[in-house]
Image 1: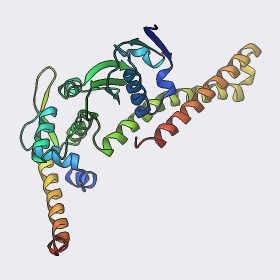
Image 2 (image 1 turned 180 degrees about the vertical axis):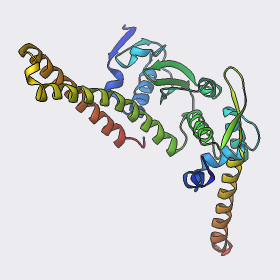
Image 3 (image 1 turned 90 degrees about the horizontal axis):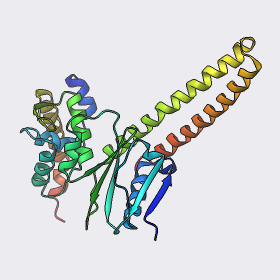
Image 4 (image 1 turned 180 degrees about the horizontal axis):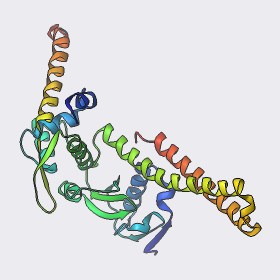
Length: 109
Length: 179
């Protein structure tokens, strides 16, 4: 998938995709992703097995992640250059959202 | 006391995946357990009486799975009960929080869409059957003997009823696709 198509498909990104891509800046298998996301979101997001399996299949098919190593039953994934680019596009979108809403947060309650 | 319960057409009576999962969960809560799910389980399921248990079941459709499919679920603590057609049934016993395999709206919707796609394959086969037999009856009546004609009419009606039924099944799953 080229960058333009990937932006159209993935931006704005669901939290699930965002945290899976963020997690896969390092090598992880499915269960490892869940543990990492749980830790960095302080238990706010606990991804389920079906959600992770489906998301990884879709991201790999679209070329945003790749298999780094595998044995008989387990696959370890990492983001591709395309995956990193798309995550940065989303990060910039979130920063812009934050700037738009910042003044609201600065108002005294 | 009865120790076995046989249920016919369980998956046909509960076509929305979450309804099927909840039904299995209720059965387990009443002490009725399935040991394995096999290819014919959508037609007949045998439950064995045991202790009531709190179990979460998951219905997941995948015609083809990657090699890490089973191990991903197992690492999360799910037990694979087996496969009927392209549906994998998973089970997990729990105490407090009910475990979920699909934790966002997108993946629930995509699971249900895959279920509709699986039903649509059978739907298309029956529809093609109806078309083929209708063409024979309408355009080539001279080449079909009276005996064959009657068989073709019966076949067409039978396939048409099944196609309509599956059409309703797809519509019903679609309406319940956020569950």
